[in-house]
Length: 104
Image (tube, rainbow, N blue to C red; front, side, top):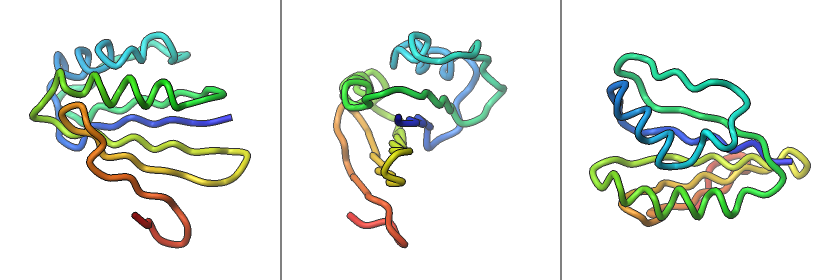
């Protein structure tokens, strides 16, 4: 199983948080009702078997928000590993893997 957390780097207003949530399609994966919070960073966590398709969708759909950057933390609970993707304007701009320290 994997736990995938998607976060905005910047603080977003409530309307933008909702727009991000629906653009990334998170309403199809979350088990809770998403409620934006006034002027905070967007954040959603989902649990699923395979994360590659969701990461690819977020990467491509991030082009909808060219001025915003998002972090995706992909936690593999079976292997105790985590990968972090920095996504902006439809591209992965950095990929880090965990160990004792984040490594490129």
